[in-house]
Length: 573
Image (cartoon, rainbow, N blue to C red; front, side):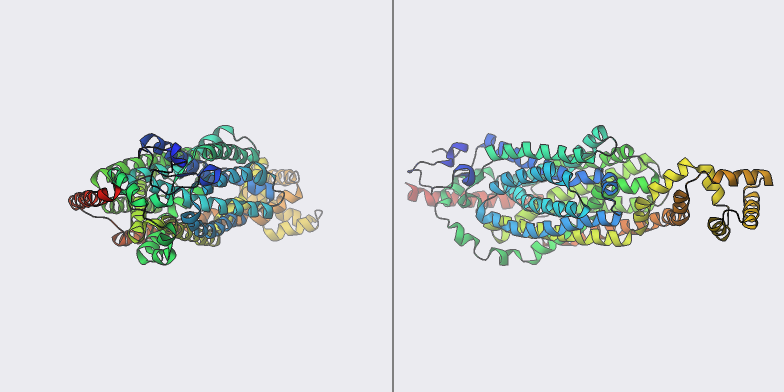
């Protein structure tokens, strides 16, 4: 049988020399490395899966205000929903190391169908905020597994010299997922029908899940357990597959992955992504509360980030594969992103900063982030392969567990430190609504001393308190006594509950408006620190700095491949 056989190779002939593989809807294994067409088809399914998964994860951020209002939850509680998702996702990511034993395609196909069901039936019908939290945690757990299995599939189908390009396309998942969120929500979200927005993402997941269930395949363990540098290694990989024991290859896999270069690299990229995860979950809220942006304006600003990021991921991956190095791209991208975050920390404190200034800063941050991340993913899988190619999913499970743990910790810190944003989200809308409905009356109430106001509330017929209030309005507004009395009488049109709400929460909202920029500025500098910490860990990872040295390594590798093939040929005969 030709080595180009793809889907039909699920059932190899008895005389092809390769051990039989598991077929059917559970096995999904290929006995031969697929040709270019089927391989591109499988990778396309993986990329589509990543897109819909991030669409599902990020859609709640686009309808956050409606969800908060529906369940009467605080902004802090809403953040803790994401924290719960991060914790369950971290645990599930570690469990996803079983993909080295159970396979990747099943976890993807059945998992994405389950997430679709949760989004269509589960989350929109949650009757309490606790049920919503539990269902979102369950969703995050399933996706924690899938988001380890999908990059493992990308690695399996991508030799090292095409790895950065392939990982660049896979990393389009969160970027395109975010674009889908902003496009769909900005065109179809009207009023408080947030449940339908959740269901839309579920329908997309079910469609991709059916495609994965029917069409997705994976390499047999004997093929994927080997190191493949170029497509020209395919013949040797298949020839050596006959002598590989998958169980033996996986012994001690966790111990091999718990190394400084693996754990340290995973921690470093997680810290570098603090800004990204903040942008995904809270950038719309940030611009709404600090700059008064509408949902559409905030989302259109975010699109500058996502579109630039998508282009940077693809271009960096292609150029990195062409030059055969990763580390220079990681350093360059990391430095550019750090510069952009520093500019954002400086300018975001200034209320006069314009829309296009923010757009330019977002372009800088996202371009640097895309260049660094696409090449980091390629280098990380190569670092894992340096220890044991058979333990790829285990290494990615370490990365997924560390990443989601860091996200959970970071979001917890965000919830604790961003107290002003919590007040603005929880109390601000009601305060603004009352002010918009009774602008002059509330302005009059704010001129009255709290003690005088309390006396009138206790006894509206207190003549002395009434005259004192009139005098305070006369002095504060610069009007005559008759106009002051008229304004006091107009104040009676405001419902007592609204007036009490303003008196209790108005000062809190004013203080939060003052404190919020300072609190966020501190947060942006924390993001900058995470980006800086990322840089030294690059030196621990696999790969050359010099393209010339990388070409020499490739020439030596190809010579060894020819020698091994020559040594195997007599045995094959």
